[in-house]
Image (tube, rainbow, N blue to C red; front, side):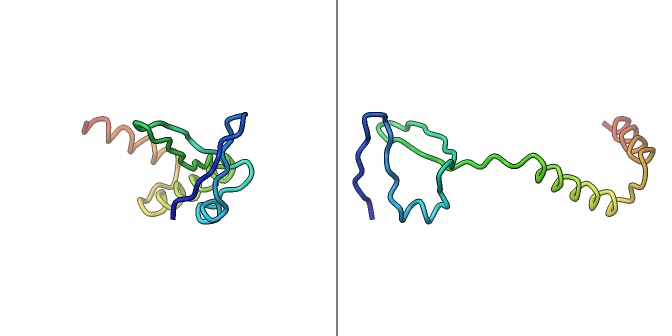
Length: 87
């Protein structure tokens, strides 16, 4: 159900609590603001924690290496050369 809100003199708009809860928005949440015709769109964005992202990528890379039989740096170099010859 649509709700009515007002803009402050500083351009701030209150997002109703029900919507904030549904979207997991809290203090410091980042959003992209864009305009579509006469509509103002807000989209929640999440910037990943670099350490968590590195950990995730490391786990993915290890699993991929195990699955494909890559055991050393030499195996990686060999695959690169094989790929380049075929390309």
